[in-house]
Length: 508
Image (tube, rainbow, N blue to C red; front, side, top):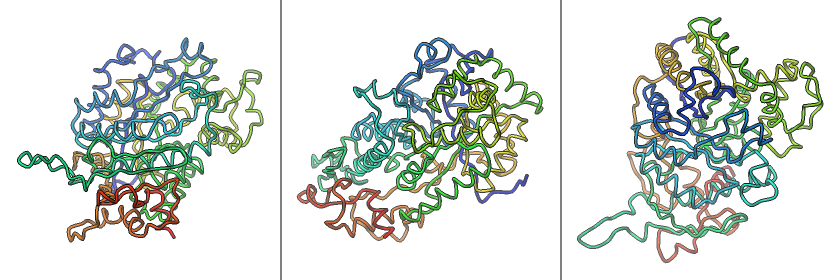
């Protein structure tokens, strides 16, 4: 592969998942199973990723145990730390690496989410990111006082409004609102603290937030859906997208499709980073790496592997032969779960003519993400191929077991990526936005000021909201609007557009 790509460098996330991403990681002899829910275990993970100069560590959240419960508890490791609690602890033992946690828009409230992530951004010195998901597992509803999971379309409608409200709350304090003037007794300028007065289809939130504007302006917004609806949501709101693809061609198609939607919302391609997940098995030789992968697969109980596939496809396969093909299944548009992962498994099984047993083998490691087994040079070759051929902006690295899986990547693969000029040797900034090359968002409530020193990238990122705020009209949809004015007396009546409305208006 080529070795000179200094104009553009990879962005890397380190994805924490239990004691490793492989479903049998907890059974692997070198896995530190005793570290589960111990701070030192996660501290080691985060500090190793920071030593490797990763952009961020990422923690998912699954607020429900897989079905059936007895199998999930007896044969798998379903224990997960709550993301914000863990990230707050990791903020105190790291200095530069970004801290991204998952919180559902279906089973949370905007004010809580805005407050928690703004607080984390302050406490970490500007390193927070929020992975906004709609939650795909239907059983989650019963943990939150609901009989049924919301329909897929409704979940995304709620999510869109949810993000609009959260970002408005993050903007409710202008950057220079704090005065802290001990002599005069003035703590903050009331003319620069704004109620958002949001009245929408799903939420009614007055604001302002009780946390002043954070170091990054707003924590970085991440999204993980790859369905058609998910892509539209990401194009409007996300700054990073985590996704899963098996082939270069699939990844290139997704990359081009999502990046191609950004101009319609007044955004440039550089304002969104796409990071597919990769699970690497690393060895001194290719044979050693493949032998390691086989060792993990040998630890998967057949019923556990079948259960994982059934949970993704939401179909009972127990009556079908393991060495036969998948039965005919509904179209992805007809299911209410995770549509993109469902479609990915179907496409993989059909394209490669996989039996159910073979599909289980492919899924139990990375849950539909790409698995690579090889030497550090071979791993780097494959990462570089996707990167230089516009299939991604980097990767979310998924160690199969911990702590060794991440140690191997940092000690063996990262040096090879650096040798090729594909990855940083040192951090050049201090915030997550710095690492990702994302501009600080302009506050929607602040009066626009001409600044000769303003950077083109910052101006571009704010163009949609700035132009839309200037052209707000009575025809703006009340269901997604936030109302405010730089003047306290007008702050409850003058409509200000949300990012979604601003982007849409800019597109017209």
